[in-house]
Image 1 (tube, rainbow, N blue to C red):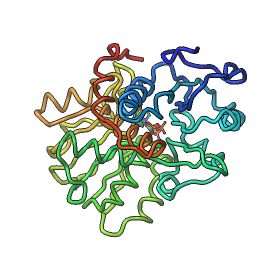
Image 2: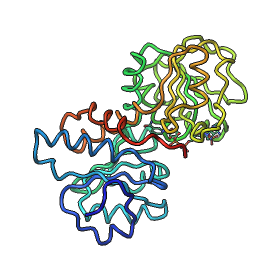
Image 3: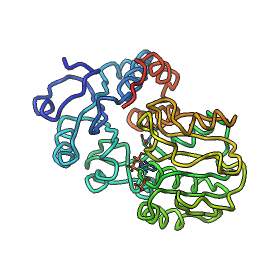
Image 4: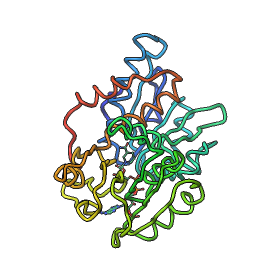
Length: 306
Ligand code: NDP
């Protein structure tokens, strides 16, 4: 039997003969992923009262982007019921799914696939996972709030779409490059009815930003332990909270800066848990024991800094 802690290779899939029902996260690289730890813990907990889940397993599979089109049919044949997608597959998979939810279409990216009779259906649970995380970490009701979103990639797009859907008061979207910013704006502006949208580049911070915004970092600046923060918090009117989607490393320069200024702050672990729980709920149709996911992550080895 393969070891759940190891990453599977594409080659291993061709001779796949594990019994049971299978789920997996696909990425490249994937060795660092904590998704199997939290999903297998939740599945064990669910199976305590519902034995039909006792042979469900969640794997991690290293899939280079050029192999994704050929790997998805193999996973379908091997009856992998649910798939999570991480870097670099979230956008790439859009043209490979049999159907896509409106939520994922608007986000232009998907992080979850569910096997249906006609093939994989694509979902995006990142945005809803973020909103749940903000509620949990800061008791924030997104509807009556101003947000400063940093980044314009897949994660930022999922977040922006969800915040606008919630009808947040204003959304300030900043990015390093104009190209990235121009990619995210048409969708968000097209959806916004009650939300005012304010784009800016990191090189020119907006002079009219109100105090009390919730800052969300959806850039990859901070993934490496010596990365500087994408913007200087001290240059802004005082935010009410700072959320960094990065959870590995657990503390980024942006979060340290927030702590130094006495601003409530949290890393992306809560979003990881909630987007994962929403995916598991889609696959099983069962209520998901979030406490089991959280405890498993706390007990897992200290997070390394990539
Ligand atoms: P993408 O590659 O799609 O987007 C990256 C974004 O980061 C772009 O806006 C890019 O700007 C910006 N960027 C990259 N490097 C820098 C830098 N040095 N300084 C400033 N901006 C930079 O990645 P994703 O959107 O998929 O992921 C973004 C982050 O969110 C990652 O750190 C990821 O780990 C995290 N994430 C966390 C999740 C969770 O559950 N906690 C879920 C999903 C993502 P430009 O357009 O100029 O290139």
